[in-house]
Length: 616
Image (cartoon, rainbow, N blue to C red; front, top):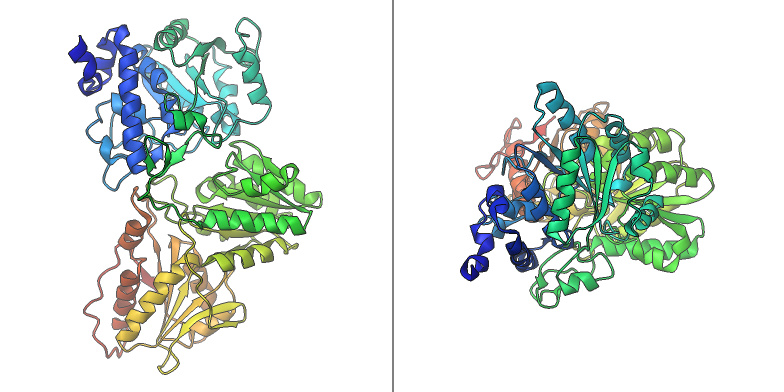
């Protein structure tokens, strides 16, 4: 028995092995799982706190339900590491969130046990509703549908739309497991959080919000007692009706540094020293990230103007708003995981005479495009959006790359979009944005170190000229969007070594297109636009359209990300694969010039761009 207990996790090759274990061995297995999580996530980074908190819950789920026959859907998905370990992916876990390795979220391509690969919150209940309907139509009465959602995920409006439907169908059994740890990134806010606190006090016999909506209610359950949680889940399954199982857990459970962390319980981390939970000596923790520059700059502006307010959706610290919140707590509003509400609430603030700054991850603003369009822009309201993690984000993968915003929002009338290239320009553009009162503005910043200043040699009609070859004819104009200014300058140097005259320009405000750009493009043989958004519909496309009315029509090469879901990997490597590093930009430029009539230089180094590029 001792030898078996010492290697329990190694013996778990799938859910069947979890179900076969004697119950007295489960606490030891939970310890082993936590040890693996701490060791591997501290080494490589990832979501630590959420997974430490669901170890016993995940064990109970796999003991009661037979995945994949029974369907388990994890909301948000960042708490699915334990699920991966229990479903045959232990050997691959060392490569978690690394290029070619396991995704940090459920992934259909990895396992039949991953039904969806969601990593945006509040979606699991809608998936469950559809799956239960499909099972009913197919006559599959023996398949359970279980949705695991955190109390933070329940702050999203989509979750309540699903609850409204699930509770109204008593004949359709869906088990909603609420993982209640009182937090999303930070402590959960709003009336629901208050209601859950009341239920945690032992109000299971009373009528509550969920019973009013048509659910049976089981709980509160100690989510760190596998036997108790398992029993609650078995009772829920036997009811064969919509049931809410209220499971109370501790985020970061079993790892002292996470439990003691007062910010986010080590929610998402880079490399850490496992004994202390502090940043590893070798870890790249930028002293001046784009996020921190924004947070400080906004707080400074707020100290000068009392009409500046801030809004976020459960991302106070990740977007840098905690700096302003500490100084002006009454002027910072965290609305929970509710991006649509955040945007329209900001519209109301603007109507009331304030200038809201809405700080979200770029990927999450996708969920509120209609609100930007119809609730803010239609009313020409002065709302500033700051999109963190814009462009390639890295190891979080397809759902977190902030690569859609430029194409989605380029069509919004009256919206002006800026992309700072360095910290100094971020502060400058933010000040310009909040000084705008005739319509909405947007700034996009990457997940990266802000780096050094890239000074302009001149400013012309609002355009920053970063480089120009004074002694050579103007062959190539490179239009760099935001932080791509650095590789653009390096590419310019490479092209000049080939005898080409190169101008590098930063538009600062990238959309709508500054009308000085088409005129500048006509003075060059080729204009190359580079952006870390999708090529289709972005800045380059907009410039091409602006050039259609220019005579002669300039040749424009549009470089950007492909219209595809990019995998997880480092920001640097994914940019290189898309041809957005200096060598890729130079190769694509030489290739395009070589195709022009009368080309007189060798372009034998020009290779096809991995992501593709088109010249018009």
